[in-house]
Length: 393
Image 1 (spheres, rainbow, N blue to C red):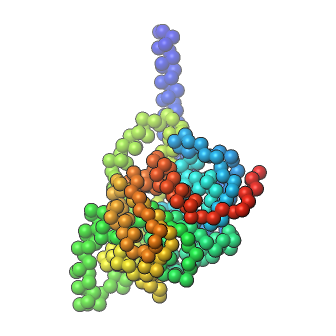
Image 2 (cartoon, one colour):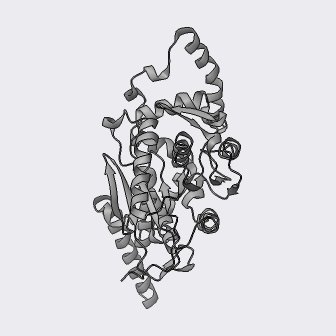
Image 3 (cartoon, rainbow, N blue to C red):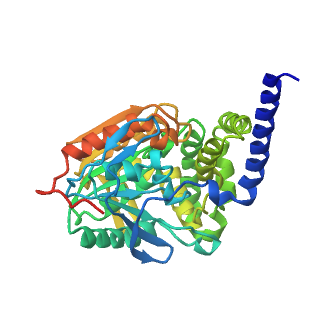
C-alpha cells in the first residue's frame, strides 16, 4: 500500500471518528454546542417569569463579526439606552446568539447602553397571560427599572416581530410616557389582514361572519376559557418550520455533510435551538390577538383596547424606523409597512431588506443591512456622554 493511500485512509478514519463523536455528543452533551446567551449581564428586575437584563460595556477592544469584519469597541457611550424587546413564542437569547452574530454585542461595541426585556418561559400554568399583562403591567415595570438603573428618562426601543407590536401597544396606550425617543420595529405585522398570503385573507374572510355572530348572539372569543387557545412550544416550533420546510431539510443535510466539523456543528445547533426549543404561547394572548388583531384588525385601524386602556396609535410621535424582509413568509412587506400610516411621527422611515422572517433579524446579511442601518439611525438620534466611560478591566 502506498504512503498516499495510507494517509487517505488515516484522514478518513479521523473524519469518521469525529463524525461519530459529534453525532453522539450533540445528543448526550447538547449544552456543549450551544453558544448562546454568553454575554455578561445583570438581572436588574424580576417579576414572576419576566426579567430585565443589563449588559455592561464589553471588556474587549475588538469585536469580530461572522463576516470577518472587525469592530473597534467604542468607549464613549450614548446617553439614551436601547431596550431590546423580544417577541413571544421564542426565548430572549435570540438577541445574543453566537459571539459574532449577537445583536447585543453589536450595539455594545458601538457605544450603546443595552437592556433586554426577557418574557421568560411561559407554560400551561401561564395560559391566562394576556396582552394586558405584557403591555399594562410588565412593560411599565421594566421601563421604570431601566430608567432608574440607567439614570436616563429617555429610552430607545427595538422590537422584533411581536416585540415591536408590544412596544407600539405600550406607547399608544401610555401617552403619558413621552420619553420614548426612538422605536425600531423589525418584521412586525401591524396589518394582520395583509400579514401573509395564507393567514391574512383567512382572517379578513372570517371577520364578517364573526361580527354577524357577535351581533346576533352576543358570543365573543374572550368568553371561551383561555387555556383552550394555549399553544405549546413543540406545536409552535413545528408551525414555524412548516413555513420553510425545504430550508429546514437542506440545512439538516448540510449538517450531515459537516458533522465531523466541531465548529460547524456548534453553529448549527445554536441557530437550530431557536427553531426547535420554543416556549409556550400564552392562551389569553393568542385569544386577544385572534379577536382584536386577526379578526377585526384593530391595530391597522388605529385603535385597540388593552385592559382598561385604549391604545391610540395616532398619539405616537416618536422617531420610527421599521423593517420588512423581502422573502419573509410570515410577515409581508405590506403588513409591516402599515406602521407608517398609524403613527403621527414626522421622522419615520421604512426599509425592505434581504431575508426571511429570521434572516431579516439575524441572518448572515443582517449585520450589513438591518443592524447597520439601525445603528447609523440611532447614533444620529441619541445623545453622547460628555466623557468616555472608563475602560473595563
